[in-house]
Image 1 (cartoon, rainbow, N blue to C red):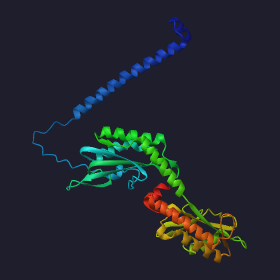
Image 2 (image 1 turned 120 degrees about the vertical axis):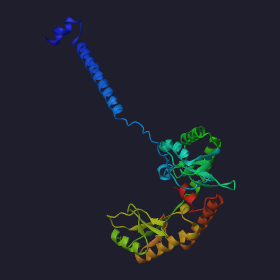
Image 3 (image 1 turned 90 degrees about the vertical axis):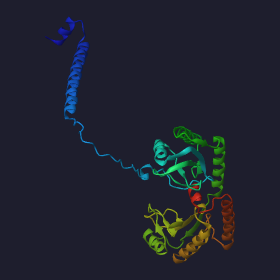
Image 4 (image 1 turned 120 degrees about the horizontal axis):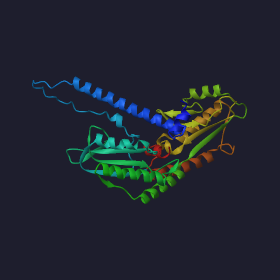
Length: 339
């Protein structure tokens, strides 16, 4: 019988009739599924082994040891209140590191770098601070986020999110929280950003080749013989001391003749003890002599002894300013701030 005629006899449309058949088929499938599951459970019961009447030997469970690497926090660096917003959580009784790290797993989606360390109580009644370890007990933890960097001060929303997470963590771990006011932290971030802006100096010395432009292979050969190393991306050359870059060249074109090299020194991230400006100046003078070049300032005027002395005095003021703020040039704190 045609489907249209069959549907009309029941006062249904073709669509309604089709939906009815689908519903019926689904009902049949559910019945068959339940019957199969019932048989499966019956089979499992038949396969169970009844307990032996003989006394069982005691089972000794090995302690669960969780590698702290599985719960490593994003940054393993020392928290520094000079550039970090630091919030402390204190526990009524010491709690395990694994409990803390499990709770911190929920922070994996946090968009800003953060740090955490913990206080391990000692017999003397004091304690030792260190990176969170799953197998230790902690009387207190600190959580921190950097207040400013070269990208500027931390945003209001970012800081609020961080503080909210710490408050929720305190409730989860039943901890007493010690947190500065958000307004105070935002003011500190602006002050830190202002200090960073005043101190973030990139000092350059230009070597101009008037008589002849040099190819990249030739310059690469000359500078690497003098101790320069290629940067990771290969676009510039870096001058290292004890594995740390002191100064570098600006980006160089590998495909065109090069008529000028600029040596660059990021002042706040290199220790003043290394005398980085004098080292860079000496290298620039030697390179200019080897390649028939001359040293000029950014306006193309020849670098003189007088202008060099002015630069030295300005650097002395800058180094003193950073030292006074507690963020000495080249220190781990300075490198974090100027990153």
